[in-house]
Image 1 (cartoon, rainbow, N blue to C red):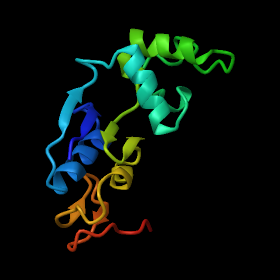
Image 2 (image 1 turned 120 degrees about the vertical axis):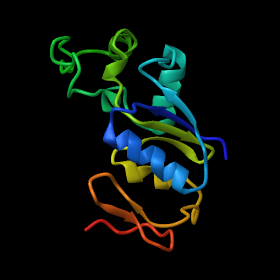
Image 3 (image 1 turned 45 degrees about the horizontal axis):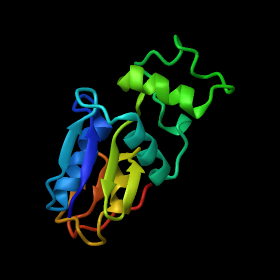
Length: 143
């Protein structure tokens, strides 16, 4: 299965998502989007395919979001995309592309929705200790 993850290795959610993909026995194409950001056309396509708005993929924490006034509801999608192109750190992560869809994987276990059913090869526990997949490879219901 061909999978692409737009990844930030400094982000725990992104690391957990990558680990869940690997727990399915799949080695994805890892694109560190801060080093190699998607171009504008590709990013707009990924956002549309994920079924979310440009505003939904904006990251506020640890970014110039407030300094740039990106909370202004009158800003258009084109203006928001311009900001992301100028400051890739504004792109929330990770975005994952699989043959089953595109998803902003926050929380990380959202990636399970676009991986084949039954693909998890065993238990998975997130970095914070939260159990996501049991020893039989089945998703654990949130408490």
